Amino acid sequence: MSHAVWYPTLARAHVTVARGIHFSSLGHSVARPLDMHQNKLVEGVKTQHPKRLELLPEEALYLLERGALSCSKPSTYDVEPASGEEKGGGIPMSVQQAYSEMIEKGGLTLEKYQV
Image (cartoon, rainbow, N blue to C red; front, side, top):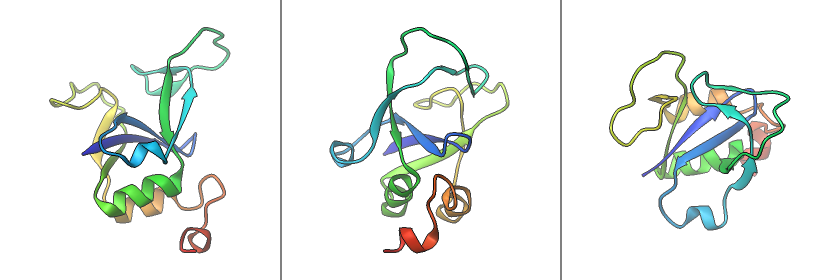
């Protein structure tokens, strides 16, 4: 199963574990400065950053509904990750919680998503 971390300030889900064929047509690569220890974006840094796979809210919701993705919000606690998890991931969101977090972000409305 794939895993992503939802960043509400970006309105994007960062895919930390990509499994399956979905990502050949979903997601996009972005070089984004991120301090993984603080779980926040670093502004004004002009160094080379590795590209990371990010999903739009509607892509993340689609994969969540299919059961192909688990998504969590960044953890604000200094807790060691469980096996197979990246530091910064918290408790996985339910589909209902993901809808409430992701709808109305990045210009996505429920009417646009259901078309």
